[in-house]
Image (cartoon, rainbow, N blue to C red; front, side):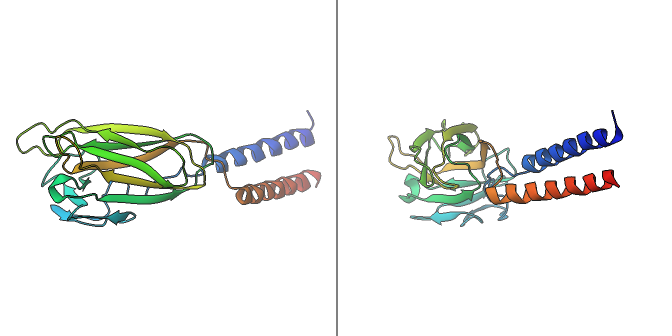
Length: 221
């Protein structure tokens, strides 16, 4: 094989590798402060967590440190959304960008009950997805003073109808027996294909073509 031919093959291989590396580096959609570790607390306090929009009736949401209650395995803090104790309908929301429309993604999180009831969390989408909301039920607490000690992993699939999706998480107090403050932690998003935006693809392609042109000129010289 001639040197020029070998260099041409090398050029094409290099361009393909660059495209794969850049496209693979595109970040997946993710939550800000997904595990509630940004706003440090050593105890049990009412808070509007960084990165989240909050609504409260009564005191919740509560930011709780394991040194006070609970034993979340995802860092040292978690959030509790209000229930019957505060006559609450507290909720948190966050808008996340970077989705591909009509592709299937998976939302996952950890959840725990405060007290004797099986606390519930309502998960829905207020913008960017037509996927129906669902209610998820935690098992009761183990007993004694072990509030928020049994953590379970939950997940649900959703399909974006826009590139940005607003996630809504709300405590559900109207149960028999009543729901107390449901603990939540470690919100994650997976699935879909993280394809670059069209403008990014154009810039990537222009850069790769320019790189290939330089190599070809060097070969001819």
